[in-house]
Image (cartoon, rainbow over the protein chains, first blue to last red):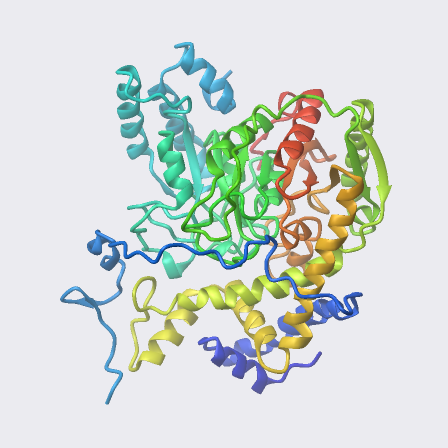
Length: 95
Length: 489
């Protein structure tokens, strides 16, 4: 399994991460190492087997769609890195 | 015996008999933390002042007959990825270093209902990603049996705190072995319940289809007692099961006669340290003596399960950790121009290397072109792993393996080699992949005096059998009476 510099930068971009130039080689090596190991899933005798996404058999769990007010808005907003007039503050998005 | 050496059921007995007061118990733990925490660094946040106050308050209420709970006033420590209202919940990450949870996890509500006293939040690998607690961005926890060794991970702070008697018991979380492996490394008892038995609401998500909260305790009876409190359906976690309540303490029969134990020979292969193997062999002989029917069989899934685990866990993590964007909570970069700038810089500056590595791996296996080869394949292998376990449980009640291929390793030797760190999870991950319950209990020490853990795996929702099997061995061998952490440097 070979991973190119372009590929690792593309994946990092998809994950909203910046990778420093000097770290690229390390990430490539680590990822290749792990993927080479992970590749053994392709030797597993799983022809015709269905996929398992979870281990319990719950299927479509329903509940009433009721509005529950979260009272403590202060507690929510105290974690905001920047806020203004009770709202989360972000840079201008629309030009 | 020191108060902090007692198990919770012993503490409970002494409080009931008026030999100890609730305040005295909490005070003893606070003193112990003040004395020993500097050696082991188990906590990210200590709540000692709050705990003393709370203990006094509970004591008054108990004296007035306002509280009936038998566990009222018992202290506990909480892994720092479980939300506690009004308290920092950091996940040992720079990303959440200043995050104060606005709500309680369901398990915290359950503990509050019983009037337990929270001594603080315990260290872990960042976002529970790791097997040594060395990936914590906020504290360096050491193993109380040897301060040059790691406590295991990711619930390393919880396991080390229980072993060092800084808390009588603790909550951990287990995604691929994060309760059982540190319990093994620290010579304590760690139980990972069946997926769906305990609500995950308020547990900061790492890999949602694998995560479970569970108890880390001094002995098996304490484990059963804490599990009794934690279980139950929760509307806020749709994967939690609605089933009749079982009394796990009542299931401790101290009898394994006729119990069928399977020994999967692949879990005793060349990667397993010889002293670990030898110790497990003795434990197996002990079970035979106690009347269990023991048989070797083949369960050739460990490597497939490990590969599958890292594919699925990283894929789910890459999605779960997408929420950390520097907008509503968590770290925000100081220097940005656009919204995208906030996302990328905040995440890149605040996540540690291992977290970034797993997000990138997860993004890779989910990306177009690789989805079929890795993610989809891994989910099929998950079916295979489940089926193989189903087959085994047609013949056996319990599957017995080492918890970890080695005892606790030296600080620093694996932290720069991610793949080698991953291989340390080979004995535990398949349990999560199949959603089964597993317990680790100490079964001896190696020639350097480091504890060795034995893992007992049961079929889904067979915690009663798992706990009774562990309890019967524990009663026959008395590890805690024979071995104690030395804090050697």
